[in-house]
Length: 179
Image 1 (spheres, rainbow, N blue to C red):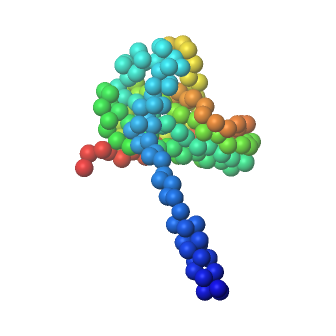
Image 2 (cartoon, rainbow, N blue to C red):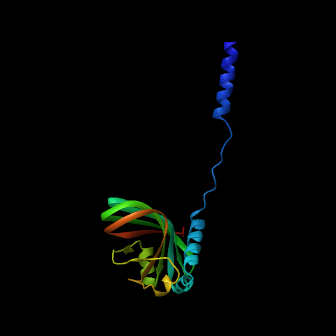
Image 3 (tube, one colour):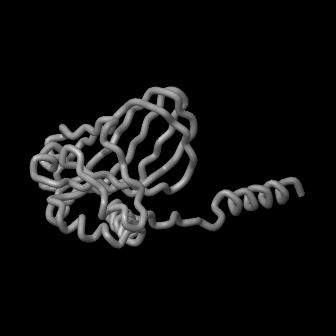
């Protein structure tokens, strides 16, 4: 009888450990996330399409995670486009210092007014100082927004809450799609 109970316990454990397999959901690719984020920016502001057409290039970051408590940071991965054609992947990093608490995620769209600004991105020399402010994506915002140093930034909150009065800037590292 103890042998039978051992076999039943072993069989039960095997069923539990090897039970139904839950296959992971297919996560959207970065390109799919970028397309979705760009479409959401355009839905939020119908005047953005004209600005995109007039820009030499743009970079889309579908999700940038940001958090801090005195010291803070942010990071996100996106894609860069020149004349609407994918040219590479971009990693955004940000380090900040000052009064800040919380965490949030946001999408970011960076437009490049001229070749010089886009070249700074391609050479991984693009740095955004504190004086270059971001424009919240809302109806009509793109129409009146102004480029600073050849760059125009739009953001759209995704989740979280953050209070801050900080000093810091964003840096961009570019990797070309070409082999």
